[in-house]
Image (cartoon, rainbow, N blue to C red; front, side, top):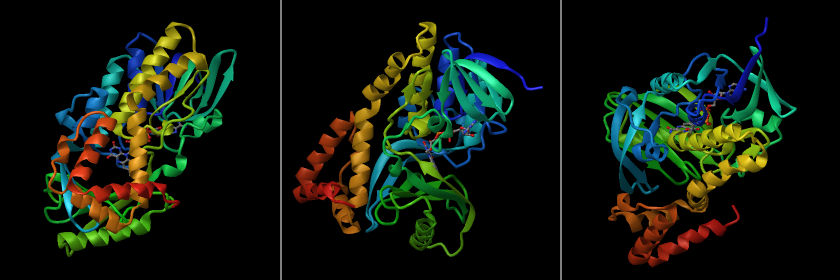
Length: 389
Ligand SMILES: Cc1cc2nc3c(=O)[nH]c(=O)nc-3n(C[C@H](O)[C@H](O)[C@H](O)COP(=O)(O)OP(=O)(O)OC[C@H]3O[C@@H](n4cnc5c(N)ncnc54)[C@H](O)[C@@H]3O)c2cc1C
């Protein structure tokens, strides 16, 4: 017989945002169930397995040795010409399954009731409560948090358009590759330009003979396999590799700088990739804010859109400028020719861009200063944003 469950909050999706939202609600002594259709924590559908310390700092989460596979000193950003700048910033290649399992145990210890192999089908609102039909039967709750990832079906079922610029999703293809010593490098490499329009192609070393190669492409459709093949060819040539084994290709959408839109309605909050809040660290922070507001709304007995909008306001206060500037930067990059990117890169070659810190606006001003000092004409390349492309 199908079970009937009752909870204060139901979180749908064991995403970085969903697990933080659930944790922060449980910390307030409320009953929270977190469901996911996957059989167990870990094993993400796409390999989201790298981050920088600075990104986890955003969420206030300590790096834990247990999930680190390879430590890196930072990233090299390559122009099409092959010239590059170095950003010194500690980064990690992680075992994403170990990461997820560690967090599953942690949030369980804080009181979250995790149910794997449970799929949510629909959400019905009636008399101020929700009934979510799931593969184990209906679950009723006062509030629902949707964190079901980039292709969120539940947000659409609830009539929400949680992402402002869905056409900006960076469609990605990534694969683990094996070659002699390919993993023995201290820096991630990001290559920009026509090799991956609008975002980047990546080389992420993970020690020994293993690395991952990927492409993240914006506004060129969701089949990015031809960009991936070009990247493999270029990479092998540049690294002088005669043979390299390519593992299973994984695909997915990265909602980088797609900007949250309708992320609250009566009794509903949307968080993480489904809300255009991309990345592990940034997703976790968004989930924390979401969980705090959700808990407060239950404790005050006010789950109205008006009260829950506090979540959007708090997120806006922390991240709006960074996301909007990020979007402008990616759009400018997408519209620039390879030659323009090469010229722009020259401007930064001998500069220590790792020291460009501060708020997004401060970072923008510091970069503009470098451009004005080294090559005032390079400012003109920013006009690419105005191109109709
Ligand atoms: C190829 C690729 C590589 C990436 N690499 C990185 C990286 O290295 N570092 C980084 O920070 N970011 C990376 N990203 C960005 C990534 O999208 C985010 O970091 C993050 O993992 C995505 O979280 P999310 O909120 O979208 O949810 P997800 O992690 O996708 O989780 C959503 C969960 O919801 C569950 N679910 C969905 N529907 C239902 C349902 N109806 N019922 C129950 N459960 C459901 C799914 O099973 C899933 O577990 C990458 C993206 C792509 C596409």
